[in-house]
Length: 169
Length: 418
Image: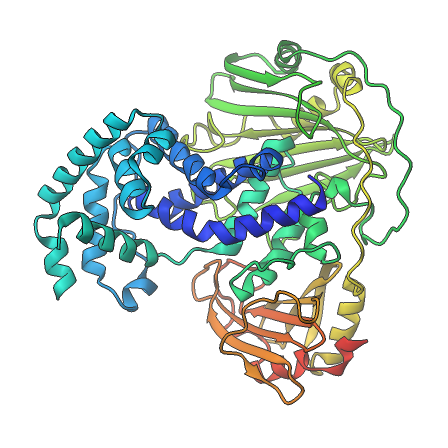
């Protein structure tokens, strides 16, 4: 890469890696080591293809697509090897917010299938449309809608009124 | 509140409870990309150290890594720099190298197989030469089992720009202050080639126990054969399958020095020389010389390292060594700047941040002290010190060697202006 492209890449990576990491933490059910690996792989892939990617309409959205695909491919490779959920960072627990709620949410996410989890994270954390989610996951829009409602129902069952109760306390 | 909204709120709250290790992520991403590009496994140590300090501001502002700053040379890859100092202003003429006939992926895989001892290959993939993309490389990757456990073995052939950058991949052993878990030997062979053998871990903190052993052979004309092997069937995501990777250091040497690679090497185009980035003006030597004056009497300085704009040294006041790092950067006055929110503004208009915190790279009991000064003319001096001889390891002393007051005196010294 030319120096100017490296500049551009580093600027991009610096600006986006925080958000990518947080997304990865949700996908990984709180496993921060896995999250770091996923972000590393994503940024690495972006680096290799930077010349092409940087000219794309929305490199940031593309990076998140790469991240979600890296996560799904990781889960295919090692389906039984995820660390337990609940690696909520201690410093965060000390700040504002509710650690119990976070733990409950991560555990609930951990009970979803990888693809359902990806759908939930893309739609409700990344605020992606059904169509965008479908593109990222290489699914039809209809399948995203189905999976989305199934995942929501599952989360509602697992969490019960936990979210509302915790948020109000 | 509808469940969807509650869920959205909870996802946001949880996501934001994670503090991203930005510097580590960006460095790891660049390293990963370069590894994908041409398996330059450990040439990134320089950029890691430089970016580690640049990241202190918490943002990678536009222009931060503009040509002229030390980090660019490091991040853009050793092959694009001309010399250790990065100071060469002359650009060598383009090499007129006619590449030989391309070799196929199958030829690469077969050559690698032919160089392995008795055993079985369960998986093989490769890249022939003459492919598209910015890097002309050829490589092969196999999962090999000698009967005592699977081991992934990768070989990558590439051509580095000449003169070969002495900071580039496979040229020198990394600073043990940053990779304390690695053993590394460097040998200059009779024909002037440099052989580097590294025995480390996939994760330097040994998190998974997967070992990553690498050998690099670099000829003076830039031809490079590098190999990596792991004591696992995959570099990542696969458990340890044997105590050590399958090939011994002697076998690694034999593999990278084999003449079986010569046809494939001859098929690679030499890269076009790239102009060296401008120097930022203060070399590691100049920084270390100033430290010699500025560090209080009675404190020893050992193990100096550095590159343009960056230096580190071990300080010792008799209570044990502490790693001490300095960055000197030249920013455009009035241009985009790092975030100095909360900084003290000194009478001359300089902004100063003094901070002590848990070490960002972890390590039991490790703390770091930081003084980050930006002068109105754009000169930035950042020092960072640890209560351990390396970053990311457990504390070996109660506090870093210098106090925050001493750091303030050091960064505000007029000596940096020269």
